[in-house]
Image (cartoon, rainbow, N blue to C red; front, side, top):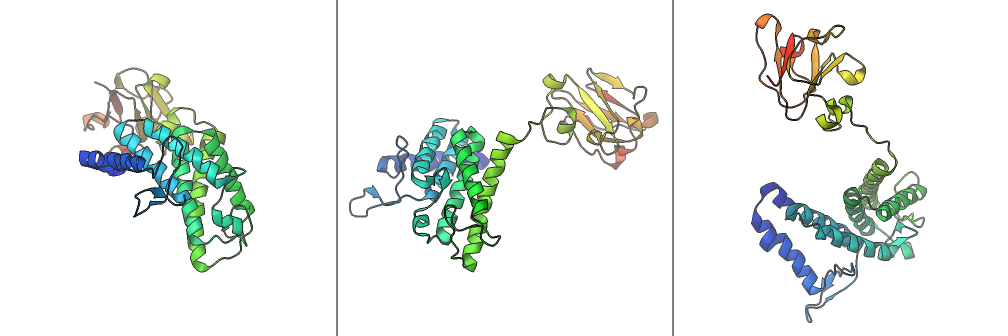
Length: 302
């Protein structure tokens, strides 16, 4: 519901919906944001929360809380999500490796793997939000345990022992579940190990980073042929006005990419006054055949 609210902005999805549902879960004791505990169900006779806890329930819960935080702006939901995950780690990790109770007896089958897969997805999303070191450690340890326990090139049923009790149905579920773990590991690699992408003109044109004039100090740039990142000609400007290619720049022969700084706009002119584009307010990688080979000059802002 909270995710749907971000699309529809229907307040009924929050008040009378996601917010009230979470409050009800807390009031019944099915979840406890102070201890991080979570129960699987309620007794019909006593209406008391009870039962076991499962990894997937924590994965679903933290993703719902992140959606609530996004929908309401209330970051307390993220704090609650962290409390639940810390408790999940107490229940479901050994040496930072995720496991289910069935791992103890080496009897895990499809359900146990599917359950872990939902938790992996929740961990990936929560780590991307918080960059919490413990979450990263659990994801990384679990990922390398998965690699160490592969069976004949197949994803393992267990991350802590060599479970060979495969069936065809298991393999499908295992693949989906452990692909979620691989996705989580990509997030850890991105934020812990990968070199930072330095804001620059090439990254902006490729759509890898937003263009920030406060970093670049630029009003706009024009690139020729297949674009600046391939080493082709580029000319950038720090002011507004009408611009012709300066000496040594050949972008008038072919324009393939333009970068327009925030708060600025650019107009492309065909040769000999034969026409011009509308004002372009955002960066474009490929302008289109009409202007791709027929730009004589540009104007920035006026």
